Length: 113
Length: 113
Image (tube, rainbow over all chains, first blue to last red; front, side, top):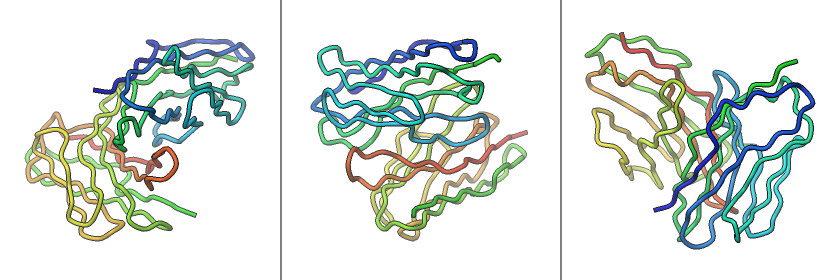
């Protein structure tokens, strides 16, 4: 079945540092890929998405590129802020026609001032 | 615009008591609906999903059940809570459109004592 693997956390950075959170996937067909963010005590919010190979999703300074050749969708941000501290989930759906999403386990990001 | 509501926000219940969590969606019709549980410090576990009124699929055998009495209403229930039912319960919907992205409610924090 489909699976998503994210790097273990927590990731701890200083403010204005560069962020990369790795995500790789295994899926049948051509899934859509997503990053969601969860702030403490809240539900998940869609951060960005990409629906086909080489698409780049971007939002709020975050970017991720759908790399079919490496089956990856790494999340990056050039300069993190304290307010970016949250848990980030990589996910896929639509592979093989299934709309049921598959989520990674989440990566906690802690940004210090 | 679409919104999703969950209530209650927090709940403390004794072992063996019943449970009813409600989720409603506004601003869309015939959504796919989902219930997830998130244990402390862990990822998302899909519990139930529904593609239409009265259509419920269960992902995990347990003492929980779900119902969809109306198009935009999704209810999670239990007749007798266990300690292991404690967690953060999230409702989500998707429209099945471009990429099947999900939109999450604010969550219900359930503590079984």
